[in-house]
Image (cartoon, rainbow, N blue to C red):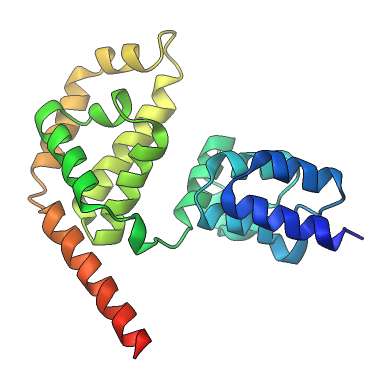
Amino acid sequence: MSDPIANRTLELACTVGSLDDAREALEDGADVNFRAGAPLFLAIVNRHRAMIRFLLDHGADGEMFLPKKRLKQIKAREDLIEELIACAPYNPRDIKVEEIQEIDTAIRGRGVEFLVSELDWDHATRFRDSLNAIGAGSSHRCVAEFLQWARSESSTFDDGLVAFLTSNTDAVSEYRQRYLSTGEDLVALASDFLSGAEGSDDLRGE
């Protein structure tokens, strides 16, 4: 039987993303899968990639959160982590209009390669998920496909990302043109999303 105090410590560690506390909780007898995978669920909801990876490495069952059909398409651990992150409900507080505008402007001026050459992976995927949350469907599909392609293919080059981008300039340029052609006003969509979220909060408060 797992230790209830250690289990609680593990829950808190997964909520805030503290790997040291998570390790200590497991050493003290916490069950990585207690309460139907609560630790992993909390790490997913809070988008702590390092914690998700840690839990999976220590026996957490990530498959319970994904449909069997999708699981058959996953070939690598990093792909599983990305799929689990995609399960997280999006918090309206994570939508930052200024950040969306800044990245959108950079992509339009410099190309989609900005997402992988200038941003870290977490910021790039947060931008991708923000597009999905605000209803920018075409932009989201373009960015999601580019990021998936870049991540899977860049590892095959000795020089990594730089060599990948250099060797695929035409394809990368096509992604930029596709992004530009969506015609979606991301700032307006994000503002509408936040207005709707605030309205829902006001109704719940009445």
